[in-house]
Length: 186
Image (cartoon, rainbow, N blue to C red; front, side, top):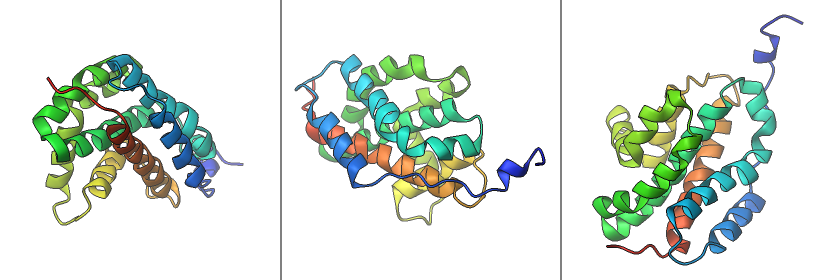
């Protein structure tokens, strides 16, 4: 077996489905009303580690050593989903202000190499994606495509599909968090 043969093999599928959505919904429904920043940050981290990691174990092994980078990008996906849902109701300024403390609480789990990108937050990510892919009508798909480029995910069959499934599920988890949690606006 050659040194690069593992990169020629097909990539295992990321098996997210209704069971994953139900687990995430149960996690977000279980949050207390008006939770602290630490509780929200832990909910996002638990969603990724307990709901998405088992479904993507084979995929992550096949793509190599990007595990912490993928985790950091999934944190951003969740915050973007939550911020987008909150922005629809209250505007971007309020949404970003509400998420500032939970994002800061989760920052310690973001690798140093990803912190500058993470610190810019979900709005900058979405705006940048819209500038890079202006013809893509779906903002979520455009954002995930830009994130895949940043992580240098290859065009190898299954890699991009796996990332899209993970990213969409994390984004959905963020949207569910925005729906299930009553955040106090000051």
